[in-house]
Length: 368
Image (cartoon, rainbow, N blue to C red; front, side, top):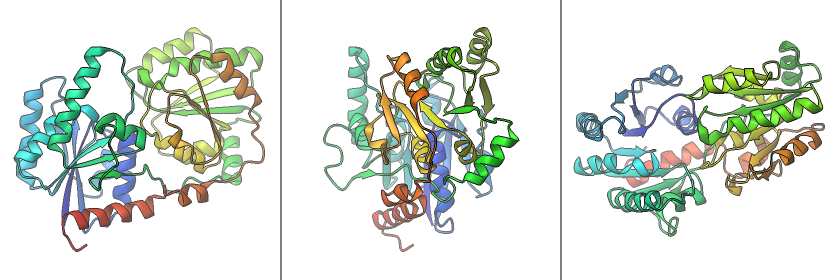
């Protein structure tokens, strides 16, 4: 059996952890074992589901609390469990774990890029350059969710040799399909009638730009009371955002749904998917949304690599009025599933899981 340790911030249902859960759900778990190191004591929503697969989950001290404690605890986990692969998902913070993996003679050490934030402060730019050098020295394979993210973390020459791997943020295309009957039943269930339903899925953090969406809704409801925005997720800004919604008198127009397992059904219910992020790597929600055939308005800060179909329009987050105009003018009739397009472009989890499984077997010289 191949033993893989994934080192990640949390298992709370965000894009990175959902992608890993998708892969593990479709791998042959008799041949490949995923374990996880999670930073902090919070138990994420995916942990219970992963325990069904007999996954070991280790909670360690976050680096921001103590880098030394973090390294000691991760070293203990790696030393005790004899992993074949250590796969790190913390961008420029991967280096300490990769160092530990190298010192413990872990054969495959992966630095995986999931971001692409442009930095303009000299201090941060220099810090990232140093972290990149250290990451690239201690890792021996360099993964990314997209080309832009790969160059951001690993350097401009990323993807020029066989150690550089593009690992698609693949989804279950059979689950994320448009179904007119499900849409009708659920809209009736939630008493949405002829409302125009906007949907956002994402952790409540600054970069997801929820305040921007609240401002958009404030402008929209002045023009029509037909608009409803569904917020799916949780996070440190949740209470602040709820207070903002209340202060603006939008409690009937903006609904907080918390963390949900029925994202595919919600995408069927909704008419337009909104993602005004300040920066992203390669958001899996955009692949899911496109698969269900929903119209999408996304920040121009997001990589255009996410445009697997013609359903996405990228707009500057400096232009609130333009977002309002685009929402009002978006045609929501004649919707069709686009799951076959997603599959054809290499984003079906079944095919991508087999590809990942075969890669692990080849690089470790295992017969799976």
